[in-house]
Image (tube, rainbow, N blue to C red):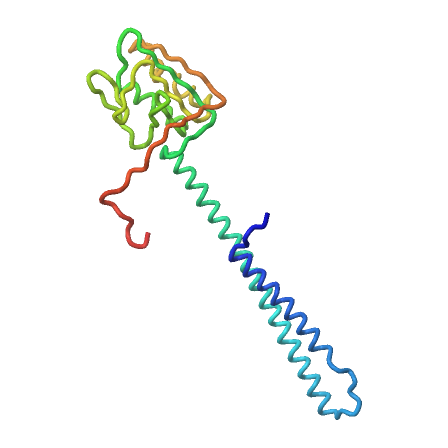
Length: 231
């Protein structure tokens, strides 16, 4: 399959062609008639000087073209590195903003109410500890993606996440280093101890090699803000 060359590749190709042309021109200029019988000394000196001048100009032109080619290759490599870095940053930001599905190792935490209702504060403590332990993506009940702008509220005794009702059992799926996340929840006086001891909830934690978080958020459109001049 043929791939259409990019602009930088085309420019490098032209430079190589010019290098070839310059080399041929130098050879042709040096391949002068070597039968100088009958020519005066002044004519021979003039011919020699002309050949020497042409050769010098050709060498300088070849050196200039080679320098241009090297600079183009360096510029192309730097541009490709910058593009790759920007694409990597974009992918990371999309994942953190909840705009794309993600997969990776992590935890599944299941919180089941038994003798009473758990509180918003206990859920917030759980989320905060997971984030502190390095959680990269969090999803509730397989349908609500938790992002930086998310908020919890309580309506008629039911906990809501960004307007979506959550009910027992609360299933929290998290992507991050499983053991670190687990430790972040289970240290003495941590969120799991509070849920089990103060709120009589059952908490089950599974360390998983692969967690799939499929829910995504749409990016809100700015109504009032716009980029500052020059940004």
